[in-house]
Length: 379
Image 1 (cartoon, rainbow, N blue to C red):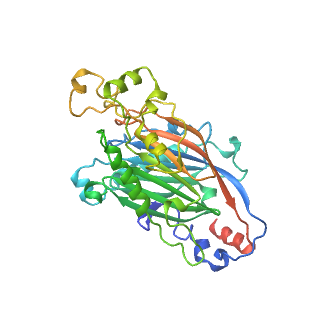
Image 2 (cartoon, rainbow, N blue to C red):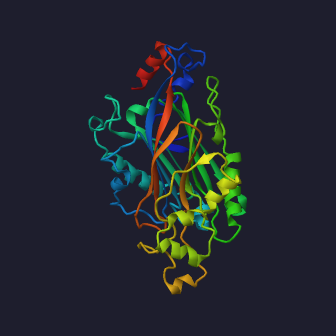
Image 3 (cartoon, rainbow, N blue to C red):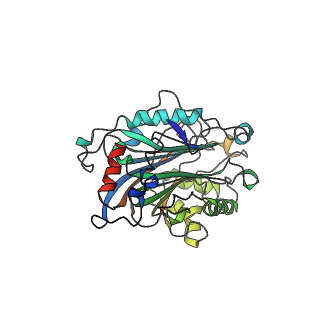
């Protein structure tokens, strides 16, 4: 992997910059060979707060990817707390050893994706191997985006934007890492975040403020004289936000426990803070979330499928945390259809991971032969 523009990727510097750097390929006034055409791509998105726990060297994410069933074209992996959020990690220099380890685990899992000849939705010339489009760590927040190698030639103008909103409103123990890229003629923005914690009444306002700060402060660089790409998150064509959003359930702890034991998810979700804030329009106006049909993802005892505080000794301590759907995946805008939303059961941390599958519409514009010649030089 290569470090470029302060992020890591498999692609060479000029791989995603051909249309940007070459006037014959990038001019917005270049004549179209035909009108715009559309295709769809499948995007796998996952989020996991790993609680500062380093993954074992033999960890296998294959089951999590469902690689033998419905492989995606693009894989997005978001993590929170890949390192412990102590003063040394928050204030010191970045330690990228752990993100490198996670990328190795991801690569090993993606290498097991079946050949395209066994997958119905992929084109005949699709490649079965995947390459890292972008990977970026900011303290504990880490996002890694991978795409089929044959699709990478159409991914351009990859950039990142990091926003801290943690201690003193600026440190990066909390915040976001956002990724921007252009696939064919459609812009994508992927936001991986860790919002303010806390289960007390009113703490949801801190999370709302974090989300608003991320939306206002995230900025992407200009793409150059031949492209007028969006610089703000909400201006992109397809936007997906994933992470430990930390919203809790606004009910007494004993009531939450009783409803969880009876698996009354619909009743609990009526008091879910994020859904309430969405309805009231106080945060994430216009965003969507798929139906939640799984158990709360937080907080579990270490290496256990038992919620923290499910015994009297822990429940009376100050550290007790009631179960909640802290880990979420939401999206904004048209052209995205969610086909899957579920949680995993790994016991690595006190959170359970969540994943979603999206079908995204992508606009393809075929210009004159110079564009195809430019593409050929990338192969």
